[in-house]
Length: 324
Ligand code: PEP
Ligand code: MG
Image (cartoon, rainbow, N blue to C red; front, side, top):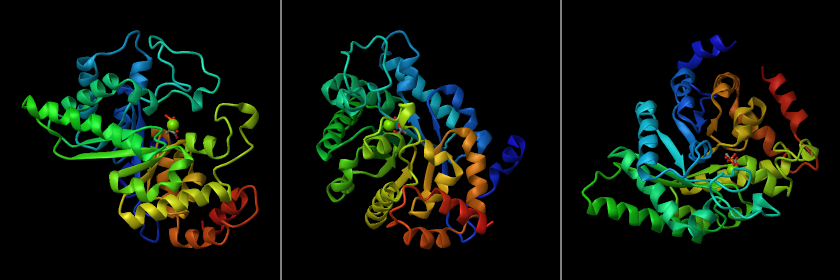
């Protein structure tokens, strides 16, 4: 089966009614990078920079970070990579980073909250990314943004690093795009204020789902209780997609659901056109895309999003079977 998917890696990821669906890959370590070419993914939609930090025994300095990101560029061979700044805290603990025990770490001092309170760490990481880009395009994404000011403050840090690089005569990125992870529901009510400041948004559905339903993503007792195929969650995704389309902001989904064919199908049905997923999911999702009638699915979902059902799973499975 895997061999069959490898054979299909150059087939276009287009629905049978002509919608282009961009399939990107999530990565975190250099060993993930060869999959970019094996799977035929368009690029890396989410590079989780905290992963190399987690496997080290001490905090990497700017040079170590820049070398690492430069190797990511090398291995991407010109395909685009979105670098997410450190998403530490919550379930991702750095052994050498002094931390206080928290009662609710998922909602605690993590990700952009740490970065803005420890600006030197953020600045060093941004500096390393600018060095590594070395005149190539650079895409940076900030995690766990929950209000517009957090983004604006993170962008200030980025601008300071760009000025610093310019003062030193370094090559600046040929193209810079700045985006955020949509993981906190509060952003749904700040879209008009937020969108003018971002080039792209990526929905982190793992965290978004847990905060949307107030349901711990790591608690096995709640595993099956709430789901992304619920009318409420799909309505939220549709709202985000509609706003982004209206304002011309690029949108993708990079949480685990993007790599599950049934979920990916539902996401396309509410307007998502870019998905980023683990490498093993690219083949199966591409096969689904190539047999999907996106317009028919959109119409089908539109009338079901107001349903009082707990989940639209069985309806979506029936749709998939009927449209085989
Ligand atoms: C997410 O929350 O969906 C996401 C992609 O980020 P992470 O899984 O790294 O928290
Ligand atoms: Mg997340």
